[in-house]
Image 1 (tube, protein in one colour):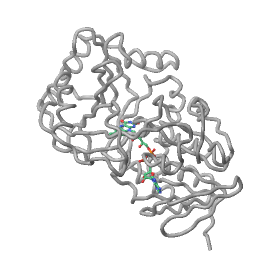
Image 2 (cartoon, rainbow, N blue to C red):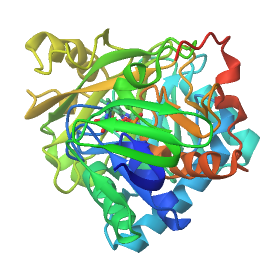
Image 3 (cartoon, helix red, strand yellow):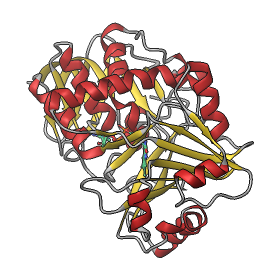
Image 4 (spheres, rainbow, N blue to C red):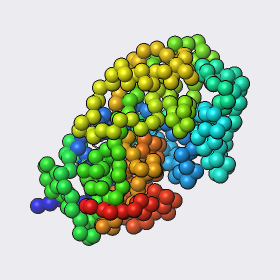
Length: 382
Ligand SMILES: Cc1cc2nc3c(=O)[nH]c(=O)nc-3n(C[C@H](O)[C@H](O)[C@H](O)COP(=O)(O)OP(=O)(O)OC[C@H]3O[C@@H](n4cnc5c(N)ncnc54)[C@H](O)[C@@H]3O)c2cc1C
């Protein structure tokens, strides 16, 4: 006989695990299923660290969600007694007519956020490690920092299970069906029933959701950890989390060395090669490193050594780079979160909250209309 729950969450990675926590807080009997043990390094939530920032250059509408996500990260830290958010501050550098600094400024003016604009001389004085081309300037915000991925997922897992969540790794979902009143989920190990379903399958969203009228592309992204060549310089001028626009809309970013990290992390925030999660080459090559190396050398020569470590990760990109969070167009008792387009981790707790509210109440007071499916013209196949 099928086992019965209030809500089944398919995919207990970043967003699904957070949804399990939020559902547990609301007294729901939750089953969370993942194709791998969680956390794992096959999807989008490995690589030690993720940036969190408030002056969101991508779109000012994310700022209210970011305010809530900061609150929830702090709640998670208090609940788990683990340190997750490292307050490093954030420095963003771009030409005056670029995307990043003007975008940060726009978000920060619209929402009254604390920030400092730094001209080239001020950047040079505070962060002499950077070498900036003519015409670049800086935007600094104290609120930015770095999230530690594994402690974050372990904390979410622990809180969700303490609230009664039944979380099962290594149990891939093979099929699901819904009839508006209930759902049935079939895995390799069993058949489960619930009133509601949340699907947060990351790079496997297409397999779980069909096309939905939204073409999602999965891309291969690389990350590197480097030694700092100028140790003395870093001691006297500690680095914040940073993001540099090297070409219009294209950035490299990096984090200071943090506990448990194999060096200073650097990566490129540009969609990589289109791949599938099954077919992707998960080994980093010298050519991968050379692509990033030239950009790092140009702006931060103190970081120019050979990588100590590297990793390949996946972005799941929506056509406009914004998240997709909504009820399924056919089944109101099926809620989906996907297309986090390489910038979703910082939002995990608030996305978990939105998914839980949408699943249980059919709506959420969080301002996520701009992330709904209706912005795309839909021809759902599933
Ligand atoms: C290199 C890199 C750097 C990044 N940097 C940042 C950053 O600095 N700041 C930031 O905010 N974000 C960043 N991101 C983005 C962020 O990590 C992702 O947006 C976020 O992790 C996506 O979460 P998700 O839940 O959609 O995917 P995942 O965390 O991958 O979770 C999806 C889960 O679904 C499971 N699943 C799939 N199919 C099935 C199935 N059939 N049955 C059961 N389970 C299934 C998978 O196993 C997986 O665990 C970065 C991403 C990458 C790759």
